[in-house]
Length: 96
Image (cartoon, rainbow, N blue to C red; front, side):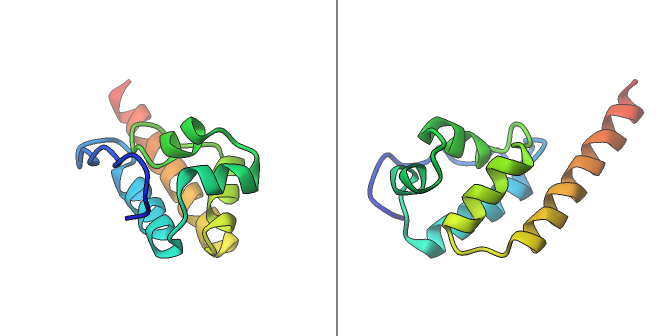
């Protein structure tokens, strides 16, 4: 893990835990801190860490900025984001 404050462990029951886990793995592979990513993409550290928190789906714009800064593939992550959004919509329909 890059230096800095340790991340709070993901709750596997969080609605977007799988998505967040993927973002965290991408960041770990890049060896970048949230501060380094923030300086590169001009989003706040809190926005970036929230994107990898699993509680909510970050915007596509934040997701792609995070992914690009960590060397990920934008097309793959756009698809992952769209899949997560569809799952959320389906679960909201079931709940109502």
